[in-house]
Image 1 (spheres, rainbow, N blue to C red):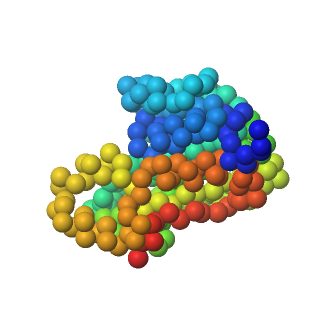
Image 2 (cartoon, helix red, strand yellow):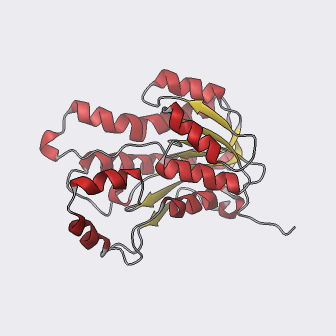
Image 3 (cartoon, rainbow, N blue to C red):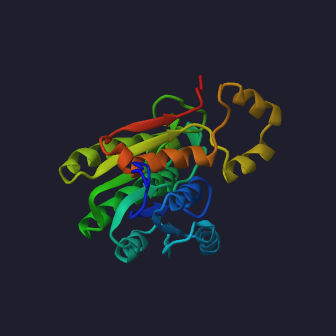
Length: 248
């Protein structure tokens, strides 16, 4: 068989936020590329569904609430030594500027920024991230290029995680541990289905016209994650892959 640089055979990948949406698709797609998955989330029922969707292999699930530093430590301790980490857990809540207070800041940053940073720290301290490993963060085009009403906090968390990723890339380059971000625009996930009933459908169709290639799908993001987790991207670190379907 010829060498395939995109193969994930022999790699152990930990995916947070794997119980639904983009996280679940990344886990499923990685398993099809030969990876052994460790999937985590706080919803046991949905995590079991994710586990059942994976291609055959010695996969593992660890239930953890990333809002708790204690739970993050338990996750990092229970996790095996990994070749890749995908930080896909996150929330999307609109907060108009005039309604932002400490509670709203903590709500958004706890899961979208703090959880990923603390998990990385604990995994590194426990020597769970092996040399030549790849760390991937799911960011957003709103981090610096596409602001939207109510998105000050969400966009802020994503800008922060991109800055963190670049520093992680710098500090661990000597161990060949790479760190990169993926910044999608609008992706059709269960959040999209919740969004439609409270939005004028004609407005959604009008908004989609701004996407020459249409809205994205979870598989599009998963394919980018596979690239960053594979040896095909061995010379890529501190980068951010923007995926926006040509959004203008």
